[in-house]
Length: 112
Image (cartoon, rainbow, N blue to C red; front, side, top):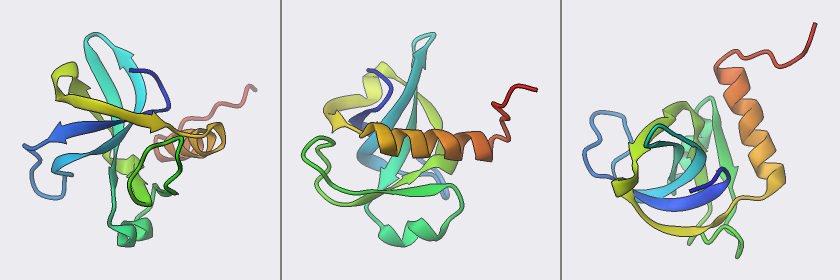
């Protein structure tokens, strides 16, 4: 699993407002036996939330429908939760999501 890949993951044990069930997720990183991802939803009304980004369906990303990346729900998962790779996100969209992560976590990447 590499940054920018989209995978179907198993989030069957989600609670409350957490995403649940099998769904696509965007891989951010892999370290120490865990993979950090952003879950996606096909509920386009979720675009109203802060730190959410529309991911349009393309042959490259393998999504079956336009989806919303729920950046505010970043989560780390064990490899056993990953079912299958669907595709890869475009560089332009990955850059947009990276900026959202930096903004959400208040990470200043500019050198002084």
